[in-house]
Image 1 (tube, helix red, strand yellow):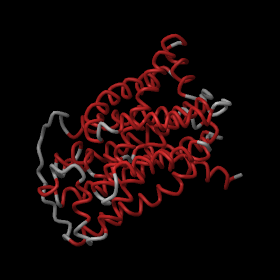
Image 2 (cartoon, one colour):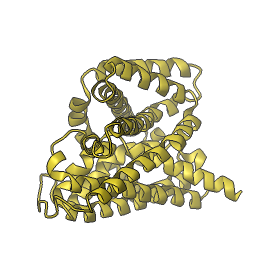
Image 3 (cartoon, one colour):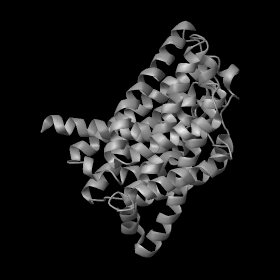
Amino acid sequence: MKKVINRKWMKIASIYVGTVIGAGFASGREIIEFFGVYGIKGIFGITISGILFSLIGGLLLLKIFNNKISGFEELICKIFGKKFGLILDNIMTIFLYTGFSVMVAGSGAIFEEELGLSFNLGIIVMIVLSFIVFLFSLEGLSFINSLLVPLLIIGIIFTSIYLNIKEGYYLSNINGVNLTLKGNFLSSSLLYLGSNSLIIIIVFSSLLSLIDSKKTAILGGVSGGIILFILGLSILSSMLVYYDEVATMDIPMLRICNYIGSGYGKFYSIILWAAMFTTALANGFGIINKVSKSKYKKLIITLFCLLSIPLAKFGFSNLVATLYPISGVIGFVLLIFILVIL
């Protein structure tokens, strides 16, 4: 029994990490925006954020287990009532669709800009692989995250250690700024949690079958938060070393990877794609979980994947700039309601 419990909390932790560590995280862009701009103070900010991810992760999963929540629709109907809950559920379905489309667009961008391949090929590869995983529902999501998350962890931590040793742990941006449009490093920590809250809540609300005890819930959430903190700190330390050079770049991690070797940038492109893939699966899973027992499951999955193509054509950066701030606000408000009411 002990081995089963251990395997389940590790699966939950890997799903947690795979859900959050999307394109913005792994590319270094989010880390610069939320923490790197504050210089050394950003380390305090990301530490606070890591603590919050651990606490919120454990608390959310514990509430899911205690209330036997088996899906996002059930969760919000329990909090807001059936009528308003169904309206909110439909709104969230739209956000999940757009979130999946953002990652599909990101896949096309990586294939075209970093790997020298066709943009459309990148879209097709992401959609086909997502379709296959969706057919296996939670088992597929858990299996893929168990495979890819260790790759993400190893790649990000190795990159950070190598570059910091190479540069003698010299930080080019120590002082940073005191205030930005996001406030200070403390408010940035809260905003960063908020920007990821919606997708975390949606995915967590579908993990009941993996949570067999309070211990599993707490271990899965807390350990996932700790891993996210370690990965965030690893990327931040690299960003602070090369801050003056990469502060305004869309994908700063790819630039600094060239200091390791000409081919390492290509390898990190694969890591970045894997991060997009796990986040795409998290977004899609929020919808697919609803139809897991439907006789039209394959048809719905096919339509969902194909309908992401038109939106993906708008481009990765345009979609991120438009959709992420809105989902961040909704996610943060919903998080507060869950913690207070549920």
